[in-house]
Structure formats: structure tokens, C-alpha cells
Image (cartoon, rainbow, N blue to C red; front, side, top):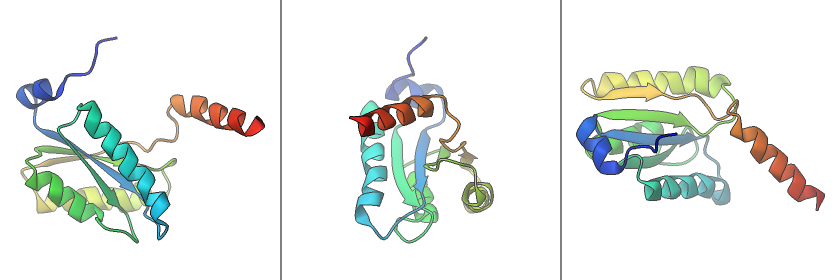
Length: 136
């Protein structure tokens, strides 16, 4: 399996791509901290030159602010990645609308909505591992 391109290859060979992770948002800071942890780890990996966090509701930055930050940082393409387990109403309606709105606000930037995390095969491994920890 080939390794993903490093940061320089990504910027030279393709549009500068940003990853905008979107969580629901919570009044509980610890819940929001999980998303910031993932963002920091993804930044360290260097696959995307821009990685930002945003929230659907209750917390800032909201999706518009997160998308705007990606554009200001020079993104030519922004992948909106729902940090959700399923494609419920927030993903199918709210995030689809947010992607459309950002596209209208920034017509020179490409915005793409990724699938939520839910049906990825690695989640089975994670669920099994978490269940195993509870058995101990």
C-alpha cells in the first residue's frame, strides 16, 4: 500500500486541501476537547496542510467560521468531515446545507462533504477493543 503524500507533495501536485472536522458541539468542554485532540493529531501527521475544528451548534467556531478560516489560510479545496457516527439529519440536511452555503460564499474554493465515521470497518475494531476494556 503506497504511503500518503507528504505535505509538500500535496501542495505542489494538487490544490491546497484543508480538512475541516465538524462535531455536534457540547456545553461540556471535555466533549469538545475530543475533537481538538483529533485535530492536533491530524496536524502532526501532516497529510493536510490545514486542519481545523468546527461545531454544528452550541460552541464556536461554527462551520461558517471554520470554513472561513480554511479559506483565509489559503485552502483551494476544503473537505468537511463529519465527526459523527451516522448520517442522521445533521449530516444529511444540516451539513449538506453548510457545504452548499460555503460554496456560495467562496465560489473559487471547492467544498466537499465527506461521509460520517459510522460504517468504516475500523470502527468494528474500536468497538470490540472498547468492549474488551470494560470486561477487565
